[in-house]
Image (cartoon, rainbow, N blue to C red; front, side):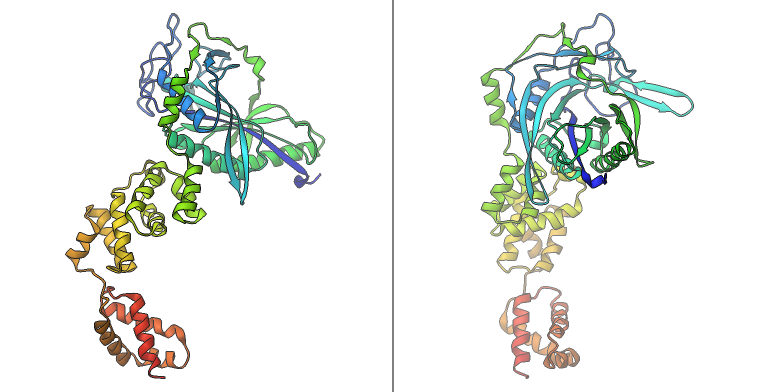
Length: 480
């Protein structure tokens, strides 16, 4: 069969570390980095005789994530032991949740190439992270237990994905939702937002699922897309060659551009789940639910719809702005001051974004007051300055935090809109530039831009562009 005769079927398991101050079952700091094995204690390293104590903020954050993704909530929940041995899991079991997760039956709306779809969420549950293996070439492996006990939510999707494009859209949307809900910093480079991809293929039209492989712990969306493309083609080649897909865990080798087998994949019953005897059940009250709902911000999709309807900006601009809650907040406040929201959006995307890195965008580290940007837009709309001068004013605002009107006044940047003054200058420019004048009179319309440039040079960029063009055409029209 041709590769195009197969359909890809995928489900994702996203692990997102929660940004609590301390770990899930002890008082150790929940911080990335630090000297090896300095953020750990007898509890998170699984020493005999120690007892876990659940961090209440972990439950709150998981509920926030669940409500933000439209999940139902189990008002009675519990924690379970997931038994398996791996060097970075010192207890030889992980405290997780099995049959009664905190959140279930949610959904995330995505759009790919203009086609909307809903991705179902099977569950969101809390669990503890494992440590980290450090592989030393020729020496063996060492273990850093700093990450042991860092609180996680695992977000398990339904097998609703049929393309890498859908996976990308989902991960970007889910990451944005978690950032809005302020439960995780979602820094993929630090491993606080990572993804396992369960992938199988089947002939198009077949209902029965194929044997899946799991690609583990990928923390780059670009790598995930590459891994999906490679793994789907690998499985198709095996099947076409008469082989059988083995259910296994694989990893993505970016250097070689291939997936590599790690170990056979266990099913849920192999983990021998049983209720965690050292922890009480988790009871969620209606009062807690209502309190969390009231504290959640307006989510990206609702904001996008509002921006398209109320502010009249483009869908592309809206997508860029709502990607960060802080940028969206900035846009809304600036728009309350400004006379033109479309211009506000344009300045955010072209000028502000060009000065920020991705982390600064997400965290909203904009050194300007949103009202100041609104005031700058009004200076343009009112004809006080032109767009070219506005860029000079903006650069000064960025560096000094001064009000735009003050900068305009101090630097004498007000736009020249005096009709008589500009008409006199236009006549002088026409008299001094015979070549572009002759070209224009012979029918070369673009020649007027040369005269326009001379006018802006003479006025140091302060001339009203619209008036200049009108006056030049008026004078040149009288010469025909």
